[in-house]
Image 1 (spheres, rainbow, N blue to C red):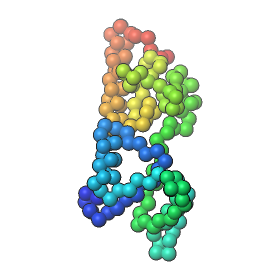
Image 2 (cartoon, helix red, strand yellow):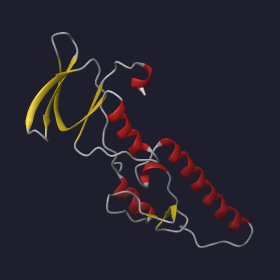
Image 3 (cartoon, helix red, strand yellow):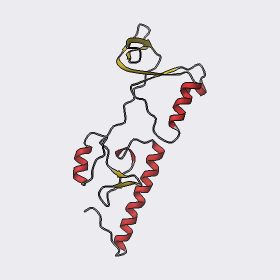
Image 4 (tube, rainbow, N blue to C red):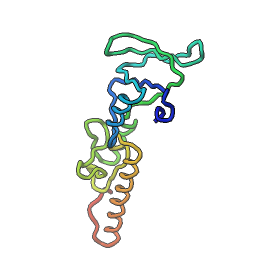
Length: 163
């Protein structure tokens, strides 16, 4: 996006396994590398220090070339990998839900807000990595599922739910 506003902008994105999540994001990532001044570097950042011109200097291992390199930038943005939150094991134990192979709360593939325990619903990144629009849509779905149970309980047609 920055390159669309300032064509002379160049960017470097460092990562070992860069994956885009969300609809159309992988194509967006590829288009950025092909049509913008975005360079993807497969590597590990070892250090960020201040150079003589007060700009950040990134020292990294280029794992494709097996070389340690340093490069000066005007701006550095740090982003972490999307991983389950600390405490998810304890929360899952309290709720009585299962975790998937990646440590996120396990959901039904055909009903992505339903957990392995009836009446417990998830939304957002506790079920899987996702972007904000998908999280908001899932929150609406989880709220609707909870409202469905509340309606059934109030109408005398109560389903079995977590207690």
